[in-house]
Length: 237
Image (cartoon, rainbow, N blue to C red; front, side):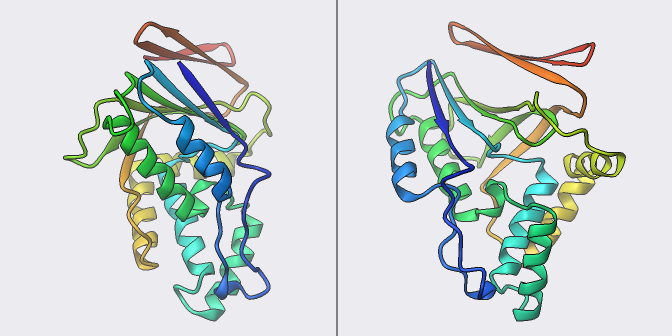
């Protein structure tokens, strides 16, 4: 088992927000750390775990919203909309990997290479781990047809230290996890000519908003994630 841990909080590269439309390169982590990540993410392991303080995948509808916002801030809808988009970005804390599309696609390509066996024998599973979003969920990840992916790729998100989200916030996140939310998010992203994510992910358990603790268990080539939410036990294998 190989565990790779990223700091997606303190290593960001941000554009010049004084001139929003003309942002310079934005990245969740800088090139040096990403090159380190690529060196660590080889095959020849039973399981590859990639932990990021912010989850690499947020709920699908939210992902498209953040990608759309980054494009608008970059000028996809013109100067006036760019300044409005920057206000939205700060007011709503749109700060996840989806809001750094270059970094997101770089990770997506890396996962594709490892899962398809282009960096050594593919692991049985690749599991993305994350938290810091005040809720928990499990997701199954699918790649394009013909990609030759042989690993099962999943993401487990748990936020045991969390803010208690209000009803409105919970409702919005549930919509972001729903099929209508995904359709609406894709429409927004397409309107700003955002590049397709290249992968698809489906929430298989959650989202949960109560107190939670997750446990990862590995036995040979099998991996289990147990998420204990309040007094209820929810298992995903």
